[in-house]
Amino acid sequence: MNAPDSDFAAARALGSAGRELPWVLVVDDEQRSQEAMRRTLDEEFRVLTAPDAEAARGMLERHAIQVVLCDQRMPGLTGVEFFKQIRETWPDVVRILVSGYTDSQDIIAGVNEAGIFQYVLKPWTPDHLLTTVRSAVEASRLQHGLQRLELDLRAGPRALQQRRDATLREVRRAYDFDRIVRAPGSPLDGVCAMAERVARYDLSALILGESGTGKELLARAIHCASPRVAGPFVVVNCGAVPDTLLETELFGHKRGSFTGAVEDRIGLFQQADGGTIFLDEVGDTSAAFQVKLLRVLQEGEVRPVGSSRTLPVDVRVIAATHRDLEAAVRAGSFREDLYYRIAGVSLELPPLRERPGDVIAIAEQLLADVSAELGRPASGLDDDCRAVLMGYPWPGNVRELRNELARALALSDELRLPARALSRRLLQGQTGAAASTTAAALPAAGRLQDRLAAVEAMILRETMLRLQWNKTQAAAELGLSRMGLRAKLQRFGLESPP
Image (tube, rainbow, N blue to C red; front, top):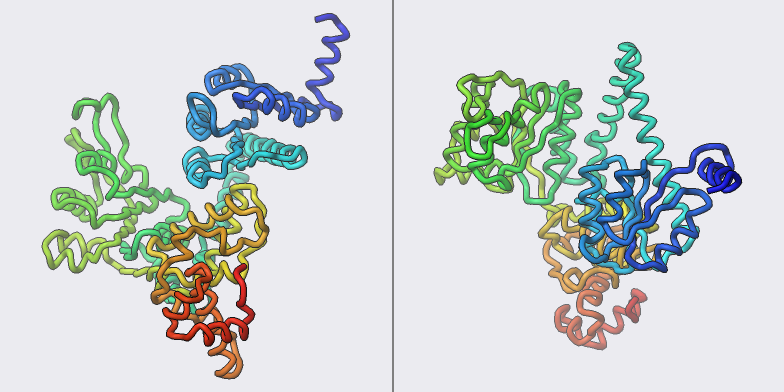
């Protein structure tokens, strides 16, 4: 390279503002797609390209790359699989998934497992791609700035104390009981009020409720409202770990204590020292393990597998289960003494079908969260979509609701999410108690006749949507003649599908 070319390259790397341009890596097996993204980004970033994950890894090892854009469907590793590897080796690199396919499972896996920053759908527009990458670079810059600030604070105890106090205030606000989304007058109000009252006392707590009702969220709120908020909050799903591994997971082990124990391991009880440990699905543990857990809770000490010494631990235990533990105690499958040890205070979270008034409030919050995660704008739910959500019994509770909204958002191009974007399972779902309880759909005040009309309109809308506007089936289900049904549909302005 001659001198003028060298000067040009140096000026190009610095950019117009005299600052070094950030590195961006584009991974795509299609040459045309690579070049299109390079041309779009080249003026503001130093862009590298790679045709597959293997080549991309070599570039990540040689360059201080801040952002990676990767196509989902490539030969060899998929984009999500590659991002899982990046997350483990280069956790500070911001990850953006690009795909021409709206597969909800890919999107959910990318968000939950690979920690993607945003999801860009093909065909993308230059402005949208530039905005997305600029945001990713800014997120990377802020993260590195925070890390430098934390290093600086180590030299100043007073500044560190102030930062700690400010962080604790932010944590308390982020997980305050008021942040548990619910409608006014929700059955959760009483549960949250009791949990907030007992949080300040160092009592064990048992949270009961079906899977997906938010047991971990309530446990974290209790921890953050307690004097232990500065300590760790450690989560373990007892039902997901085999008994043979659960003991070492919770209590730790010494090197050589069993085949494969090549080094000492600190158990989760020790990791939670000074804070809270959340034992999810504790009702799924075996009788043999329950004996060992009881001893730890009684003595306040753990013995790692293979060790002859016990170690003291100062931990608050919050347990949770979807099972009826009192019935399990009567049946002899759960130890009575362990039950009373963990159930210092019992809190029961009702399933979503028993609090239909909360469905729309939760759905709107989840829609905003998923919209931000996917980088897909959404302004809310249309009326028909609300009716379908209200009419479904939600056996999977909030977790099912979130997955349904993520799928619908990925498959719809409209700002206000329409009912037709929802899955057939929802549109044909049973009405059950969730649909017959219509408190959230009622006007706040007014004549009885007007309020009954609002209920009737909601039931008609939900039934027609669920039956795909088949008037014969709808009339038979509602006990009306076709003429009577037609008259009611005309009265409420529901004569045609959305």
